[in-house]
Length: 486
Ligand SMILES: [Zn+2]
Image 1: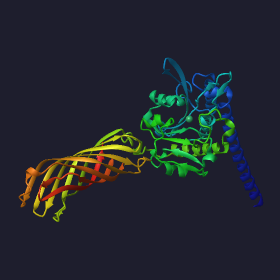
Image 2 (image 1 turned 60 degrees about the vertical axis):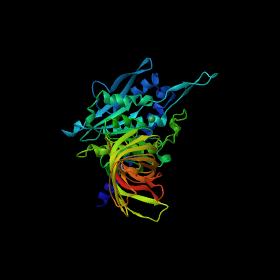
Image 3 (image 1 turned 90 degrees about the vertical axis):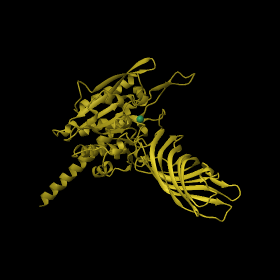
Image 4 (image 1 turned 120 degrees about the horizontal axis):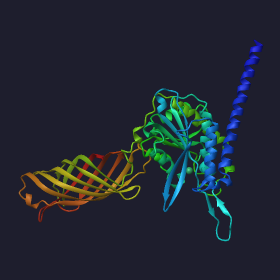
């Protein structure tokens, strides 16, 4: 019995020490990669530098050491870009870990990180030295993590295939990731999820890690929580489309993509973004999280894009047209008279348009057919009108596709009464003395994706009907409307 206990204890101790040792290795490896990639000899990995070529060789040699496959004859995906007058050669480094499932192996999860940075600049006049932008956090950190993920995931048996890719030309305009899709290195429709690890070296200072856009994949956050057995601190997920990193190229093709990120706390795009400032314990945490999460996702029965990823809905278009339907009241009020009128029904329908003036200001113009029953003590006036309200709309900020935007609006309108019907006892009111009306309008409401609901109130500033001696009447309407924007 005692022997067995001792044996168990020894095994436990060994495996504990082993896992500790393995983690110590992981952290040391990540640090080594960053120190090399962000060293002065790599010249800031700028376009056209020898340093960037060295980075390519370094990454490719690690993919080879990890024994992962290439797609095609080598890990290197070369392409050219024209920049003003010169042709620039660029290179993505692409590795593949093939899935084991007969069908799911044709589906891919892409783990990407751009390895390029800003290069170097000549110092100011009088100094003959150069300033190197080492780009440790941006993005030697993500590249180092991709290299270690290649080593870690190569040992795993997974259903789906994993692509590890170090993108070139990100800083110049997301060139590498766009070209990767354009050249169909794998069939883009088979890519189920993409991650861009871009700036992951400030975990502790940032207080966790973001996976912005993870919920563009159905159940993204729920799956992450299942897979996150090491309790890595997640700062935020959500379904916001991150357009500032390589995720954009994938989102443009309706592929769910998330930005793995630890904030802008490092000296962003400054020469001071150097290797010794990074949090390597944090990078290790993120690396383990991405390993566990990738394995978890790779073995799911299905990975489905959330509808929000589709480009059918653009949250902030410059111009939209839609239709709306409103119902409410129309009311004629007497001025300077003890006579009273009653509320009648009002219905309107037609087109609504919106022109973006700034992030939160919009010019909203509607063209509406309006029917109103205007009730007086002596009878009714039924009006058929063409009403055009023009308003400035102030909206709350867009956060994500599921949060409504509230708005208030104010402006002016004109109602052209093109037909009327009367059953009126009062002989002073005839069809001839009905004028068009115009005035001010106010509204408030809410937009959710393509749907709008609002309440608008219009008050005429002229007299719709006036009899010089007796009375004058002006019209107010209020409507509750629902709308849909194309
Ligand atoms: Zn970056």
